[in-house]
Length: 240
Image (cartoon, rainbow, N blue to C red; front, side, top):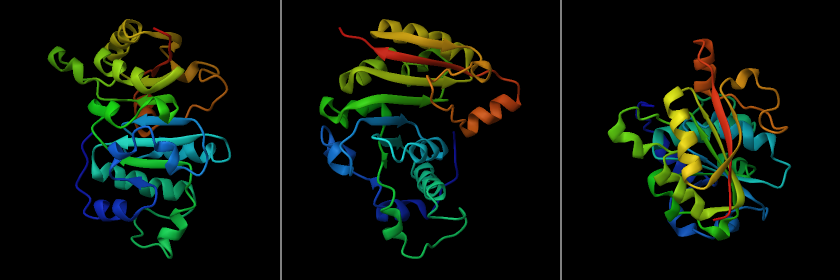
């Protein structure tokens, strides 16, 4: 997804207490950045951050920490602001200044944003980080065969995730793309994951996420309005 340059994004991120600019320095040490010593859930490709904002807020009182990753400053800047909106720190995305902004941002204790190339994600996470779940929502399907290795669910990527996912860790995956979903089912099985659940019509699937709310992303709402069914799966890492 392309987005226009946001001249304010870099400065806002650099001054935010919940943004991490040097994630490679925290491999196997992410727990030190959170108030609670708890399992970590990671969203790969967080975009504008609506999903991670609602997810982390819904679980604010639970023993879970969250990390959201993207490569584009403009996206992360919007994700920062959307987190502030969800947590009641900011009232509008247009407002440029928040009174006592830094102090108020410190109230967001269970989530971190960071900028990194997801194709190299095993450089920033390790076994000691206790990552128990990965979310992949509507990633680029890279439809041309020569680009398939860039898919976030490709075998090459899944083998990276296995390096740092906890034993029995899970991946929650959603897409609108039929071909990507069909190929991903193969990728997961080849990479040593067990498909716990799958659906070709998430909207009409009762309790697909095992008691957890289905948080609709911006893309998800758009695709459903167009009559496109959402495909989803839960994959569990199994022992080698």
